[in-house]
Amino acid sequence: MTAAVAISLSVNGELVEASVLPRLNLADFLREHLKLTGTHVGCEHGVCGACTVRVNGDIIRSCLMLAVQMHNAKVETIEGVSDSGEIADLQSAFRERNALQCGFCTPGMLMAAQDLLQQSPTPDREQIREHLSGNYCRCTGYQAIVDAIETTARARAGRSP
Amino acid sequence: MKASAFDYARATSVAHALELLTAHGERAKVLAGGQSLLPAMNLRLMAPEFIVDIGELAELRGVTVKGDVLTIGALTRHADLLKSPEIAAHAPLLRDAVAHVAHPAIRNRGTIGGSLAQADPASELPACMLALDATIIARGPRGERRIAADEFFAGIYETALAPQELLIAVELPVQPKDSTHYFHEFARRHGDYAIVGLAAQALVRDGRFADLRLGFFAVGDRPLLARSAGELIDVAVTPAVLAEASSALDEELSPLEDQQATPAMRRHLAKVLLMRCVSSLLSRPDLCTGVSA
Image 1 (tube, each protein chain N blue to C red):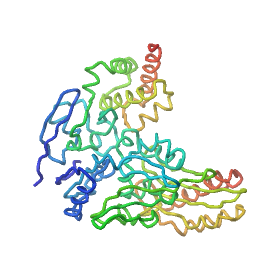
Image 2: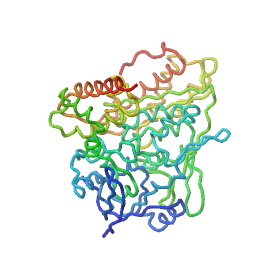
Image 3: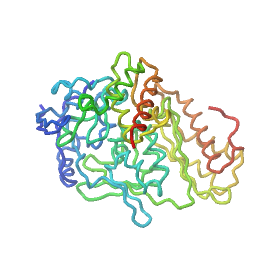
Image 4: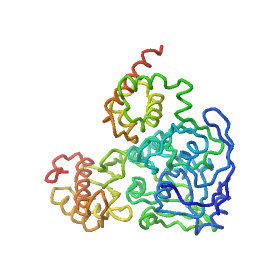
């Protein structure tokens, strides 16, 4: 009934060419087609934040983007920012502070947290909560997540000249 | 859930988008940022057969000021509005409102044109358009049409746009330097859909309202430009005058019931917002008494 559309995009620095049905969302494209299963799918209507990825440098909900909209886009997932070492310190702070239990929300939390730290290097706890307000965690009660991000921000600020 | 199947075309120009809408308009939906449309499609509240993607039309994105008119392109994103110096200078109400629209990841994609064309009655931006006396510019096969914001919203997800028309931009009058504004919404969590909200723009001279435009949202099937605001203009506002205006507002409301609130709760909260707004704009804490929320 509906025709597949050819798309070409960059995912974690690699060129990807694919033919996708229009109804396929970006989260499912990443998970099912590219087997990048670090991006999680929770609510599928933009509320929970588990599917957060970066497109052209900005965080977005991959459940609210169609794969066909990604033509010529630069997509970065949790696998990309983990493998590059970009968020190694943030991941380590999450682990040390027990900022994750089941881990379902963690990829989205890390993407949102890194986005905040790029925009404002020394956020206060209120700004951290505000920036994460679109990411649900059902285990931790958020306190440890905010702690881990605050610790990372301070450590990064201390390191910079 | 997942969206049901549809055909898709990526518009390469406004003219191309209009051709696509002329051919498929009745069964099509326009995809801009997708932050209202795609949730509705994923929840199967909507199942368009055809999607016209205008996301690549860079000429529809941006904010310009010319004389007394602020023009915002339909594809201007919420994140752009938050950062725009023109918006901060000439329509700060909009900046305050956008901070309440969802969360950063949604604001990075959601557009003003998309929000207005989707016409969710709980959305912030439609009510702001009423308060700011906006004009909505639509283009269709027979040319361009200018629609007053007050005549644009027709019901839940319904607007004055014809299926063949594309929302191109909105025009706002540059607010006078001494104009003031108020924005507040009640929501269970910051960024969630409002239970009730109010976007207001006012001119206060010598302790009285020279002008007052009250745009309520989530109080019915469309945003409401409250006529009862008229009772507060050019008069010395006393608790009695405010109580009259509050009763008049009550007559204008037709709140809906949903899982968030009953109609009675929405009526109560709308009146609380009216009182807080008037008290705040006139710097009269004495008017803010009697009702708690």
